[in-house]
Amino acid sequence: MRIKIGFLKYKIKKLDFEKLKLTNDDNSVTSGFERFIAQTIYLRKGMSSEQEKITLLHEINHAIFDYYGLEHEEHLIQTLAVAFYDLIKKNKKLIKYI
Image 1 (cartoon, rainbow, N blue to C red):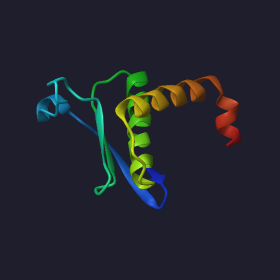
Image 2 (cartoon, rainbow, N blue to C red):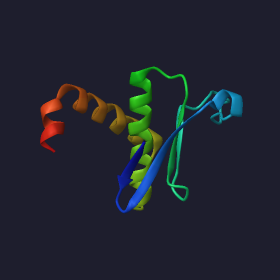
Image 3 (cartoon, one colour):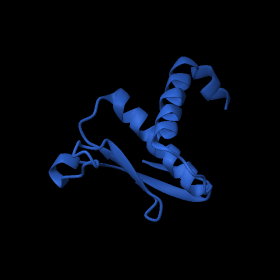
Image 4 (cartoon, rainbow, N blue to C red):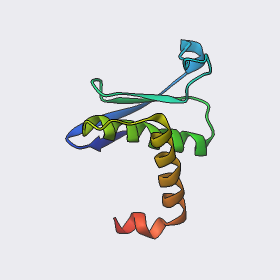
C-alpha cells in the first residue's frame, strides 16, 4: 500500500520486528516507525487489526509533522492517532463525505 502526504508517496511495509530485534529504548518491541527520507512507514507483523490501524495512524502523524516541519511529542502523536481512529470508526459517512 502507498499513501500520499503532501507531494511525498509513502510505502507501508510490514516487518517481523522481533526477528530483526527492533526495540524501543526500554527494550520493548516497537509497533511501528516512520522514515521521512526513505518515505516509508514500517509496521510490526502480527498485531491485531485495531492495533495495526492505530499504529498506522500514529506513524502517519509522524510523517505529517515531519513533512510540515512541526515539533511534536510522542504523547501528542499517540493521542491524535487514537482520536482519529475513534472518529473514523464512529463516523463512516464523514469519511465518505471528505
